[in-house]
Amino acid sequence: MDASVLVLGGGVGGSVVATELRRLLPAGHRITLVERGDRFVLGASLLRVIVGEQRPDEITRPAAALSRRGIELVTANVERIEPARRNAAIAGRELEADHLVIALGAELEPSVVPGLADAGCSFYTLEGAVALRDALARIDGGRVVVLTAEPAYKCPAAPYEAAMLIEWTLRRRGVRAKVPVDLYAAEPTPMGVAGPKVSTAVRELLAAKGIAYHPDHQVVRADAAGRRLHFANGAEAAYDLLAFVAPHRAPRVVREAGLTGESGWIPVDRSTLRTRFERVWAIGDVTGIPLKVGKPLPKAATFASGQAAVVARAIAAQVTGGAPAEPYAGMGECWVETGDGVAAHGHGDFFADPVPAVSLDAPSADARSAKEAWEREWLEHWS
Ligand SMILES: Cc1cc2nc3c(=O)[nH]c(=O)nc-3n(C[C@H](O)[C@H](O)[C@H](O)COP(=O)(O)OP(=O)(O)OC[C@H]3O[C@@H](n4cnc5c(N)ncnc54)[C@H](O)[C@@H]3O)c2cc1C
Image (cartoon, rainbow, N blue to C red; front, side):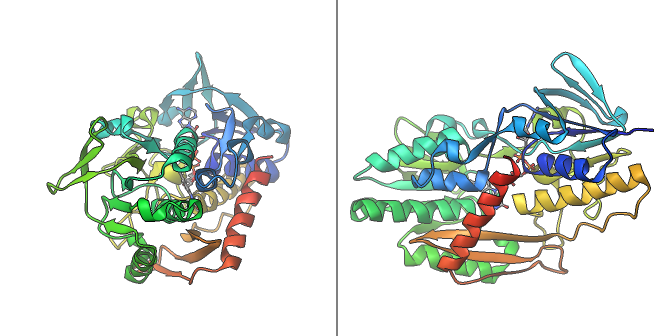
């Protein structure tokens, strides 16, 4: 009998799981993907928009490409999920399937911090990245502050890259001497899950560029009119241009479905990505996978896509009776772009016990080219 698979969310994880399943399953089996957006935005390339290297249309692709691959694409908002029935309510109709994959990512919620939404550029969105690009092109004096509003957010490297790329942009414009750059972080150290060596290396990169780093600063209020940030430790910071990473939450529809655990994210078996519901998987940013080091597995495309491949093979094996999928192993890589045409490559085993075994190579032009190639591959995947 033909099987049906319902994938909720068509970003990195959802598009990979659907594409892989289409490749693995004979044509009669039905794959439906629900995505509210009509285009994919490659998160990693938002940084290229900020520095003016790429236009928004160069880092986005129409979601409709999926339907050309034999995937039934539904462009709509998922309004309700009933995981026990593998059912979702979408634009007035109900979809039900034999297998359900939840890949709805993380919502950005600036409203968690009073005043933050109006205080600066939320550069994890396309609109915020464009606004930051335009503001950086105009600024010729005053302080730029990069802020992480909570200690955990997707791509732990990105705010650090943003600070360094902003610094580089100001230097190229010849205004750096008049524009100090500060990074206020809610977390105690950069990329802490990757271990102290990586954290120290990133701190040294910031220091070499004269970026003042203020870790352990949890913002509690932003005053947009007075251009001031207020922190839980009593400190205050003045800014002229603010670039912030908003607090992240599991999407409301996921929380209302009772899918989230204590962490606020969907708990899954880390090897299989199964949830506690039969034939329901969750992948990518919407999951919470604790590590022995006391921090969760970071939220990043490198993990979402690896998990998607494992889940696609597991579902295909169940449908066709083939060999079971290899367990998900927690391997990841990323690039920390530091400006001046170079990037540092980070890579390792995040499931290693007792602590992740991750290293960060010295920045090089080759690594930056590799990052660009990785971004191009993603955009081709969506074309
Ligand atoms: C600035 C920046 C830089 C980054 N750099 C890197 C990097 O260098 N390397 C790396 O590995 N990762 C990077 N990332 C992180 C990466 O983009 C995410 O971790 C990845 O996209 C997660 O994939 P996902 O499928 O879990 O979620 P997403 O890709 O966010 O997909 C979730 C999808 O669900 C859809 N959705 C949500 N709610 C609903 C709903 N109710 N109904 C219908 N659709 C819905 C959304 O529209 C979205 O398309 C970066 C992110 C940012 C913001």
